[in-house]
Length: 163
Image (cartoon, rainbow, N blue to C red; front, top):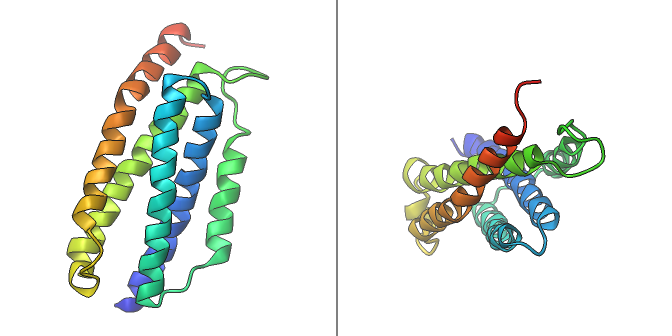
């Protein structure tokens, strides 16, 4: 069973790195705006969550997989190359997709903390880790981004009809 937990944790760490990098990119792309400030707070919290996750892995004796995390890091970089409806500039679709993917990642992180707490039994194995706090923080991050995600979607799809 611990082999399966180790695999799961390594996979989830890679995803956390991907979401952290995406949040940092969204923050840079929206620097100097209300959205940039909101995403900046989320990016900081995601980075803290990745470090908390690394701590959990260390305490459980689960080694990281630098290949998986490196591939996730690279995947985020490659994702920048996709078409966004504009040749050289940041588009409304880019903004929406960044926020949409971040929302999915935050929802996944909330599920991750719940899985570790309830299904993997880590509440008992690591009683000093406040999984309820981590779950609540993910819910707050999602709530903080939602108005911006909804607005970005409206902006993206209202300005670009069918092609």
